[in-house]
Length: 335
Ligand code: SF4
Ligand code: MG
Image 1: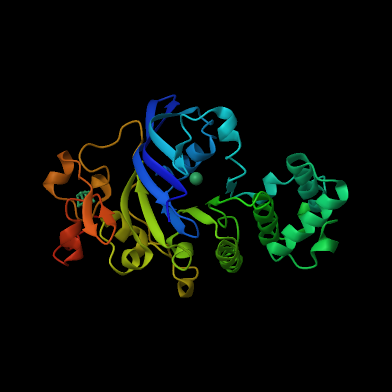
Image 2: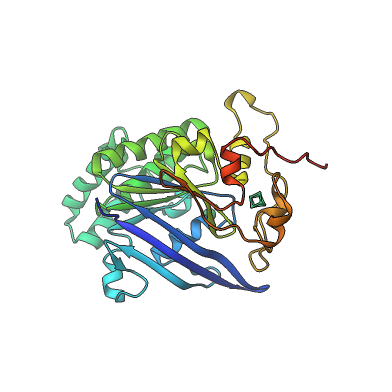
């Protein structure tokens, strides 16, 4: 099948007090119906910004698309007419955010909020909107949906509120759902339930899903492919099995070794040394070199090209082929 959504050589800049931050520096990915792409990275990697560009919400601070295309069914959303774009965003492409509590209004019942949205968007009568709200709440497995229409947001658990948000995002039967850290505010058990729900809904509805997260632990069972972002580039892109079994980029290796294990509860979370770069001053050469355990002289000055590793895998590291061949070991840590 043809891709639903193609982000092609996208560039996004933000004007900040410190200068121009190059937040997305040539990002390319695509999504087909029924497929899940996880976009993974630390905060500041640009993982949310590409999604915000798709949704047209690059507004805090003001962000600008400075190059590239975002094609939906082959049509470039960057250059299409605003009226055409409005028929896509929030309808054929829907977004689910992290913070369900602040997205719901505390003074109205959940049923009223879903119904009002349906009445505004679809012009349904009160009664029809209520019936459709029950259907949507059933769809996201909210028990006793009809009775729960009368509940207020604070009477729902965090997980149930996130289900309400998912229900609202499904109202227009979107072809693509973009979920930005949809489970970060929830505890681990509930995270797994929401991930399972998203996966089940995707199977039932044939939706394409883009899952944006900093947490490698939540995507392993859900994603088909993973794009790992660093400093506004996709530094590794692979199917989920290859990426977990044999990561090719040192940053991916770092992310994998920093997954907290369930049986380690309370023990220190391992993280990658150092911090992501200031995007107004991206380091020369490989942007990851100040933090990389495999760094060599060439990395300080020469930007690694995209390396094709076969089977649709790519990586941006001078040594990915040698890492995969087991010919590189990390430099001793000097601290
Ligand atoms: Fe590390 Fe060099 Fe590879 Fe960059 S190019 S990830 S610095 S080894
Ligand atoms: Mg984010």
